[in-house]
Picture 1: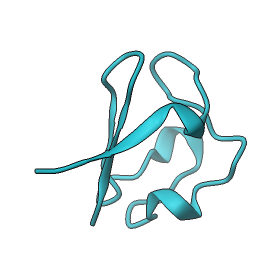
Picture 2 (picture 1 turned 30 degrees about the vertical axis):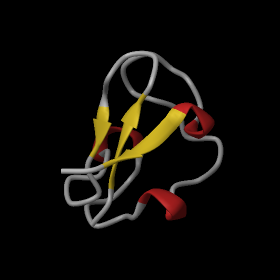
Picture 3 (picture 1 turned 180 degrees about the vertical axis):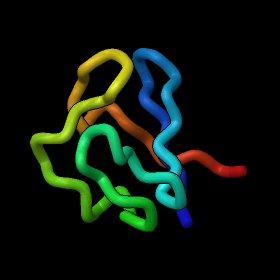
Length: 54
């Protein structure tokens, strides 16, 4: 599953872990996260994230 990094703060969204504290269940791909979700660290929107290669 594709991981995404928050450009401003470096937070990595891992779809295998999700963001359960903010209502995103494990296994949720980035594209399926609601558009109003924000980075749990710095609060920017999804548009500030880029896919990362591992």
